[in-house]
View: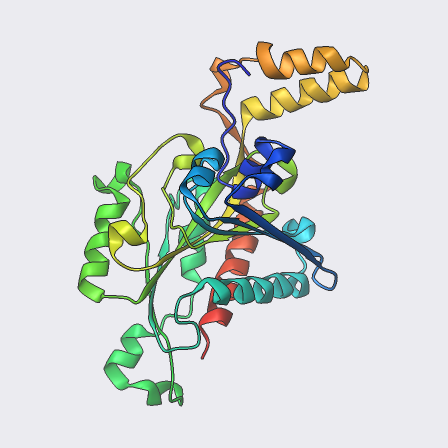
Amino acid sequence: MGNFQVRTDLALEARESIGEAAGELRGVRVEEYYKDEEDVRVTKVMIDTRNAAKAMGKPVGIYVTMEAPAMVEPDEDYHREISECLAKELLELLPGSGDEQSVLVVGLGNREVTADSLGPQAVDNLFITRHIVREYGKAAYNCEKMNLVSALEPGVMAKTGMETAEIVKGVVSETAPDVLIVIDALAARSIRRLNRTIQITNTGIQPGSGVGNHRNALTKESLGVPVIAIGIPTVVDAATIVADAMEKLLEEEKEVDAVKLVSKQQISFPELNNMYMTGKDIDAVIKRVSYTVSEGINIALEM
């Protein structure tokens, strides 16, 4: 598309963007199944080789995408089902699952920017246990086994003057968790996945990458502990919306050749490259889905 570059944090969309040939790409495996009761479609994209990672534009690892069309609806029972599904997928990625562990949960983002406040709001609803267990022992919860859960909201560099990775690395060094769970808002390629999709990956995360604001990565290599990243796309590139609308219009007019020409060569929206769109009810949606994420983590970390 000329100078136009679609940004997405979802590995599923990265796979789709390189065409149907991705299914035959060496080093990329895809598993997909649908849960009827929960109305959730789960797709696992497994990138096994460096060449495949380069082609996909994503690090080697496992990417689990949960697509739940009704996730934006205020249905508490349905959100509980999504949380339970999230907990199941999270447990499969957590190293040492079933063993007693020290878990640090980091909520990335800016609490004052609604579309970017998923991480901080999710942290608000976590069941934090580390300080109680360290002070009074597991008897305080009347149990013999318990994960030590702690949380951190590092904020953004504009307010702290420090890279998120610097803050997290310092806390990891002092508290020595066994695993890190990072929550962050993502950017999507498709409007239909906005606020309706959860991605879980064992590759860590690079804050701000979806909107072109690259920061130091939070990964096992940089922090010394396994990092599981959980994210929900809350914004879509404005140029993507315009391009999709133009392509759909041309398709409806049955100008197939024109569609291909416009989509591949002529579309360029440099003035829109730094603009991102979200829904008008994003405040209510973020409050709802952040609780869904935190509940899923709470369920997964129960012993």
